[in-house]
Length: 388
Ligand code: COA
Image 1 (spheres, rainbow, N blue to C red):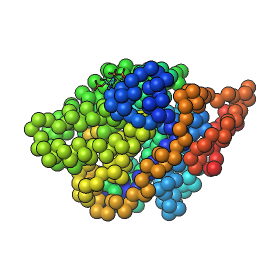
Image 2: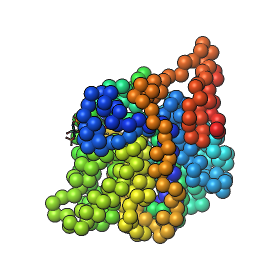
Image 3: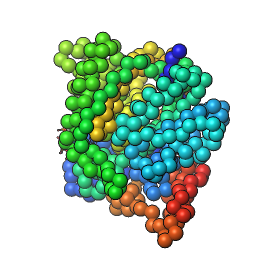
Image 4: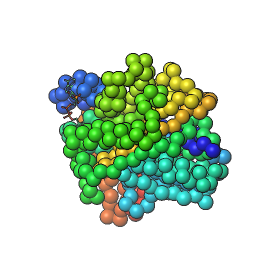
């Protein structure tokens, strides 16, 4: 029995910031962002959009009524949680109308947790082959105004349906993970933005890639020639590009090198326009690859490098399934272009707006544009969502 991703969907915020505008406001050479980080635009989420609305919107795009009647586990992976206790997956389960006899949980380990979610889903389906598991990677990346991480913010969610006999990609049982206790990026409960040792985090990312890849090759007896493409966690595309260069040593065949680079360029197409979406960014790179690469074929082996600060990393692979192209919807490009362009002052106001609660814990919001679902209000400290 094969197990893997049967459907994949994406949703991002309805507002965008141009990196050229941000560069001008920060007295920075625009090439630093467009060439140095390889970023062109960022998605900006208003206060009425959060990991629940984004995650539910991404899932709503791909699920049929039959899926909703069958799904028996909902996993939301995130590091932008809206509650310390109640799982975002419970809100998502309710908004989507998924049948009641389902397990709904939230998972966390920085940008890595969606990979753990997929692995749990795989194990669950292998024991329950009729099951369908909805895995959502949803995050809003906020570093703060004028911080070094500011140009690498973003917002978005990926929804993936994990089943037996998947129609997009079948996972191989080849996962190699690594944990190392480092403080490269963390967010204590009392802080709305993370603490980051930026340069240290890039070193950890690249060094984790090197050590996990070495171990993966040793244990799986595979080399880069066995892969048609490699998808990376993308805090910003330039770092992932450095990651690819780390894997491609001098002895690599030129044709393989050219194909890997071409597929890599397809895999960063959306991230360049969305920014960092933390745990979803690896899977946005996979969707971008699927929708933008010209020469992918059924049977191709795709590698995945997952990295979450703190730090946990993992390499695994899957093979594209016959007919995978039939499972792709419209390209994301139209929706990305339709996002409303906002100025830097508008971004500063919108992205960092906080709920103005009265003494009873009530708040209402300006009617910002959102996807299918919206955070409508807070009533006695309870978040109230509705379908638009
Ligand atoms: N034209 C072209 N490129 C330029 C440039 C210009 N005018 N000015 C700078 N650059 C390049 C730099 O050479 C560098 O590229 P390199 O890494 O290939 O050398 C790149 O732009 C970044 O500039 P740099 O000054 O080195 O770093 P920074 O102060 O902008 O910080 C991060 C970069 C990643 C540390 C910062 O964005 C950050 O803290 N991000 C959040 C943490 C993160 O994403 N970590 C990743 C692992 S999870």
